[in-house]
Image (cartoon, rainbow, N blue to C red; front, side):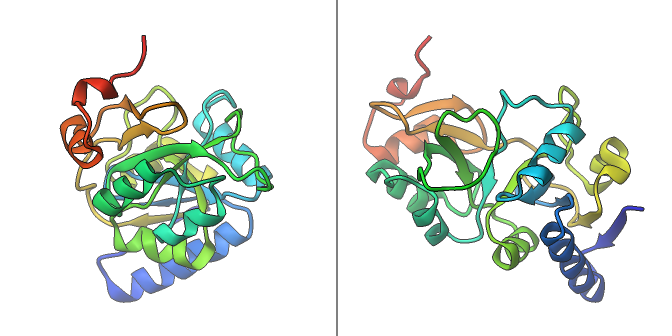
Length: 219
């Protein structure tokens, strides 16, 4: 039976975070609040748990699971070589609603789906999420909804869709942004915005010193 914890209550928050950490380390799924939308997460290095996450969402391996981190320093061990553009964007927008697609370190023993040697990373701006991430390390986290249905902006939204497929729900109140993160691909010759979101192309272009039009995906 899934457990739900109200993180506005200090005692329930402490118990909930401990329960979520235990669940993740035990290979189970948890739902946690972020600054964008609610996420369903698993230990990024537990391939069985990641497969269960994809199954719970009804999502195929062709849509790899992003990874959330609790500190920008964590990415040093996950990325083959951190591009200068990534460092600039991280300094400007992390923690926050910006996801970066980069080349993963080839030595990593994980299976996030058919990612072709890349990984999408983000550090969320939410204290509950950060506390869990700092306890368990990098987590594979996707929006807490069944694929094709609206993203969950509350813990109850997520529970209505995922039910007992998730062990622990952490209720942090309504999502602040209520929109999925902006995605920037840094694996090519120049950065590209793959998905618009709360961090605008104009803001990204200003940080990188480029024209916003140059960030449009190649069609």
